[in-house]
Length: 367
Image 1: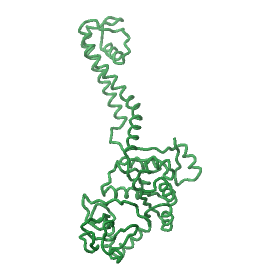
Image 2: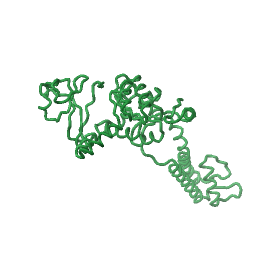
Image 3: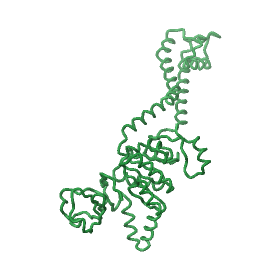
Image 4: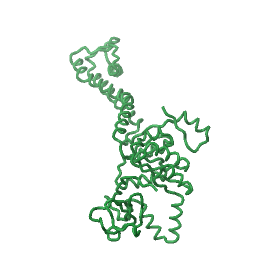
C-alpha cells in the first residue's frame, strides 16, 4: 500500500495525511442505480415472494397439518412460508396431502430458490466486486498504449483534455492524475480513467502507465510541483512529449531544463490576450477562436504531401503559418524555407470540421 503527500499543506499536515490517503486507479463507470435503492428494491421483491408463498399455503391450508393444533390460519401460513423460504424447516407444520406436496415441489421450492437469490445476490455482488475491479484494472493496463496522461484536473487540465479530445483522441486514451478524490470522481464521471495521488512520486505515475504514454500534459496549481512532476515524468519516459503550464514566466526555463518540450505561461498568455483584446477586440476574438479547438478556425499541424513537395508555402491552398523542419520552426516567409520537402510539417489555419484532427508528431520538438 502506498501513501501520498497532499500538496499545499505544511510538513506536519502532509505527514499526517500520508497515513490516511492512498493512491489508486479509478476507471470510469456506467451510471448505475443508487445502492440503497438497489437494496430496497431487492428487499421488496423478497417480501413479495414471501407474501405470495404465504397466500399459496393458506389457500391450500387443508393439505397441511400443524403439530400444535392441527389447523392452519393466516399467521401459520406466514410462519410456514418464512421458515421454508429461509430453509430453516422446523417441521412443526408439514404438507400431508398429495396436492400440498406437489405444490411444495413445483411452486414453493422455486420460490425458495428465488428468495435466496434475491437476498444473497447483494452479498455475492459485494464479494465479487473487488475481483471484477482487479480484472478490469489488469485488462486496462495490458491494453493501454500511446495514451495521454494529464496531471491536474483543474480548469487548465479540463480545457487541455477537451482540446485534445476535440481532435479525435478517445476518452479511453486519457488518464488523469490528481491528489484530490473529488477531482478524480469528476474525471471518471466524464469518462476518463483516474489515478488518485501525488504526481511527483514515480509510483503514482507508473500506475498511470506514464512509461508507455505518448504525451503528458502537466497542469498543476503550483510551479514547483510542475517542475518535480516534469523531472519525474521525463525520468520514466524519455520519448513522450511533455507540455507543462506555469504561472510565472521566470519559471519557464526551469521547466524546459527539467525536460518539458513546451511550456505555456498561463498568466502571461492570459494577460497578452487581454491586452490584444483591448487594442483590437476583433483580433482578440480571432485569437480566442484559434485556441478553441473544434469550432471556427483551428491551428493544426500536418505533414507535407507528395503533391506539395517543391512548392513554396504561399503556393499551397491552405493558409500556412509556419514550417517545421527538423528541430526548427520557421515562419512561412522565412527565406531559409525555400521549397517544401517531404519530411517537413506544416502549421496551418483551417476551418474546423467534425473530422479535423491534429496529426501527431513523430518525434517531440525541443527548443
